[in-house]
Image (cartoon, rainbow, N blue to C red; front, top):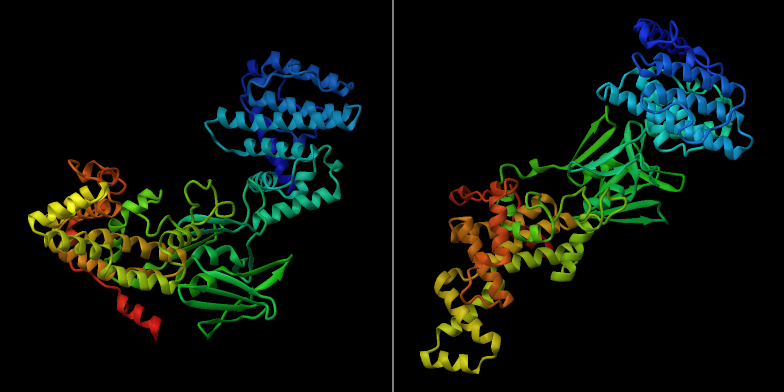
Amino acid sequence: MRRRLYSFVTALVYLCALLPAAFAASDSPTPPGWIPEKNYVVLPGDEVYQSENWAKVLSLRAEAEAGAQLPDAGAEVADTSAGMCYETGLLRLRYAQNAPDAAGAQRAYYSAYRAFSAAASNWKDQNGDQLDSVYYALSLWSNRAALLYDFDYSPYLAVSLDRNLTALGLTLADFYDAPYMDQVSDGDREKVAQAVHAYQNRVALYLDGHQLFAGYNVGGVTAAQPEIRNNRTMIPIRTLAEHLGADVEWVQETSQVVMTRAGVQVIMTLNQTTATVDGKAIQMDVAPYAADGRTLIPARYVAEFFDQSVTWDAENRRVDVQEDKTAVGDSNLEAWALPMGAILSSLNAGDPSWFGLYSRGLPVAGSGSGAYTTNDPPYKSCRRTLSDDWGIDSREALITTVCSMTLHGHNDSFQEAAGLVNGLSASGYQELLNESGEVDRYMWPQTKALSEKWGDRGILCWDLFRMSNLVQWGYEAGYLTYPEALALLEPAAVRLKEAFSSWDEAYENYLDGYNWWARNDMTGQSVWETSRGKRYLLLKESEATSALFNDALFSCAVLPVPGLSAASLSAALSA
């Protein structure tokens, strides 16, 4: 391996020998006395080799070998080029040896790290962001200085060091085979080796295309890292299951993990390859196990037991878990669900083009940025929304509410009020207004006007559209599977198609219904001038969401989920 590094350096020295005489102070640049030629890096064409600059380098080298210490800022080689930064870094390594105490040495090592890092960065800039062997060799010197300075070994050093060694075809032994690296303790070497090993064996877990959990990241090693065993990605108990919306319980007495999602119960037992899915035994090729106080379970089986698809990207060491939407066949119910729920999704800072309140794999808006490891995941937000706003805290309550309100929601109250006001004589109607409070005095005329405008349809869309939100939130909360969520919405989509002919018409009805329910005074005001009306128009005109509002749907049949219906889900609750 050392021969390869020697050949690499020799080739660079040869290239430098071909430089025009005007750019070199001698036939080729030579290393300082404290750096072996095999470790020395030559930067072809760099201005440090110009006569005046090189003479300064040689003078400073002589002073360093005579015992000079780290000078004040600006007293060394300037950092205008990669080569100048590199030579400055080498000088600082020697200054560290000349320092009178440990604090002085640390200061010099830190200065060397800064110089080598600048050298690598400047070289990349000088060469149009090209990451060639010179860049990696300079970066490797930065790694050495960082370790001598006692930088944390993980994660940045491990990431950079692994990249540099791989690019140069070197090993950790080659990394340490350089001046002053014998000062690194055996304990620190072991920590470096462990950090590099952890990085090389990192696993990134993605849910619906968004990074859910990184086993290793340059901001720090996570508290619980996934690992590979028997060619399976093993993850801490709650890492994936909870973000799919599963309730997770650890049963100490039986050493079992019990996960429940959308009515499906999965049980895994520590050190056993047999799992049960709703009481049915399933054989796995790897068993859950405990290590370093953690219990790890196989990601693939967790995902597949809950009807998710799983793929492994070996090159990027990445596991992708996604909803298996093929389970709904040719159903077009998602195409109905997304526009029906678009307003509330948008108002809740979600993306109307995602099925759910937010998107699995992303933190809830407003809770910060980054992976789920530091932010509140959507399943928790959806559960809170359902509980706080609807009193729904279970799968059973959700299915019951949707089945009931699809047929008998706020539109029943509107029709009752409309029937009352329409059944009055002119004098009776006037008497009603005279006896009404401030709000009712404008709500009764508004009810009468809406009844005349919409007839038997009433404020139907105000109910139907919210059913879309309920099933989407229920899916993300883990109360429903994806096929169940769509099947539960089918009756609402059918009623919508039968009663309306376009999204503009349906949304006008929805907006009228919302303002009636909110008891907003709409006298002399168009619903399109309200905040929700403007939001709908904005969504419809936006390039990102306009395709959702496809009026062609109203000319097509509502295609159900094969073998599943709202009626069957409701019936199953009482079975």
